[in-house]
Length: 121
Length: 113
Image (cartoon, rainbow over the protein chains, first blue to last red):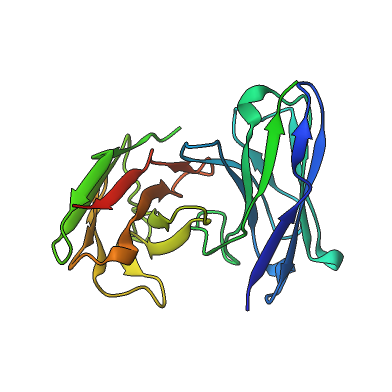
């Protein structure tokens, strides 16, 4: 059974940092593109970043470019999102989502339960 | 970025009736190389993560009831739910994956009338 379990969220002050993690199981993690998608309270879905199987390609939404960094450790079956210079508008549930083995241009077939990041003083 | 616009924002349909949700992209998501529309539909129930329903605009994900269907091509797409059930109450999102910068529609909230 495919499982994605996020952790690392919490309350942080504006300008602060957090490292989000996503542990994967039930599939060959190293074979898949992986993404982070966020959802502000009561709002819609916003893609944040994605990363190729070997970490050689990374792409970011304009809203987070230069502040967030996606990474992965295939030996640990883990995906990460380092979030820096946080703003109130970064408050959201952050989901880890699985892409494809074949291409970046694919849908998300599995999602984690999400981890909540709250940016407030 | 490709902008995805859904209509309506909310919808109330009687049990057993049909629900129709529309999604329009600001540019075509149809690939000329493989004739596929890079468009997916997701269902998100309250307090849960999104769930993939439809990909390639019209291919139903494994395990999704056949009352869910997707149609359309190019820039205009439709998610149809036939014979609405109580468990279909949710917010529905379309998503384009034609561009590396994926984008979602704003969501359509489906309720029972």
